[in-house]
Amino acid sequence: MHSHKYLAKITQGLTVLVLFACLLLSARLHAQNNIDGLRIWPSPANTRLVFDLAQAPDFSYFSLHNPERLVIDIANTNNTFNFSQVENQSSLVNKVRYSTAKDKKSIRVVIELAKKLELTVFSLPPTTPYSDRLVIDITDDKPQSSIILDAKTASSERDIIVVIDAGHGGEDPGSIGSSGSYEKHVTLSIAKHLEDLIIREAGMQAVMTRTGDYYISPNKRPEIARKHKADLLVSIHADAFVTSQPSGASVWVLSMSRANSELGRWLENTEKHSELLGGAAEIIQDTASELYLTQALLDMSMDHSLTTSYDLSRDVIAQMRSITKMHKKVPQAASLAVLTSPDIASILVETGFISNPGEEKNLNNQTHRQRLAQSIFDGMKKYFKRLPPDGSMWARLKKEHRTHQVRSGESLSLLAQRYKVDVMQLKKANNLSTDVVRIGQILTIPQT
Image (tube, rainbow, N blue to C red; front, top):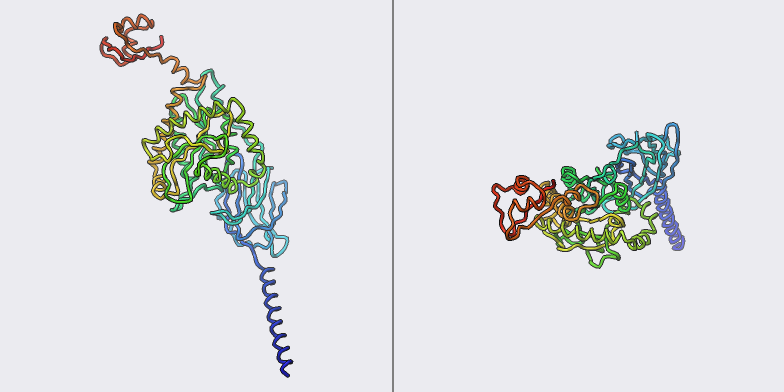
């Protein structure tokens, strides 16, 4: 009798377990992924679409033609997200919409394209501040032709070309401050202020690596500088660290080996993290970067660019010290991809620690950003006035700008005769109201 009751209890228990297992299996079979958001990042020659998902996507895709479309099937996902609410300023993407799915548990997303384009589709795992993502990179391999002013060859007297690189962008926010500030917004703002200063300076020209909120690989930024035959690449960043205490600005140049400071190693890791955020496909393909760097450093042109970078960074630091605290008072070195152009002087300016609440507040202040840009510009200007590039207008002006230190027994008339200039020209060039000069006075000798 007791054995029958015991068997009945065992049977009931097994039945409950079986039912529970069936419920779990049913829930798993009917569990659905969700599209939580869509972000469209347009840039001049390509567009990136990022679908934010609750879980890692199980997807497949194919292309259709006449008209051009990319079709993506995502398994076990619902179609509740409204694509029409997403801002789209891309000239390459006409529309994102749903189509008839291949089964009831899947969705089909159609991206209507402006023309035939290169397409790359891949997923990315969760990385702060993002969840699982499905990424579509759309590239126009035949963009509308645009005139790139080559100021080195456009005339016999060229402009000094400065390529300004606003760090991070698009899918890669950079460091995030405690109040939610994104480094990518701070850097673009300072870069635009710097661009404005440069284009208003006679004999200088500015080129931006990015003009909006989109991602560019650190390895591609030097390529932009080389394309424009730049004399200088200056990359703008806002520092961060694991604690909120560090503060102050710093200027970085390329190291021939890995950084020998804790902050330098942090910067190198941050750059790799940016690659993972912004373009996993690119970092995977660039397996030979260290080999390339080693070979490039053997070239004599790298020696020149490293020397120029170091000397110029000292001038920038000297100017920045007057408007902000410096974390380091001498140039620092790290192995950063954005600095690896062998033939172009390159510096990376950390404008302050966005991880420090006080400096985050300053970096969000428009006046402070303008002053930072002004100090960077003043440092560059000081260097190029002293050592202008060959063939530039500034090189000619320096050559024409002759000076003479007055010695005992010399007069204006004597100097005018020696240098074959008119006395009135000599007085005008030096803002003199009389013919009197003093021993030790430095006079500018005008060209005739």
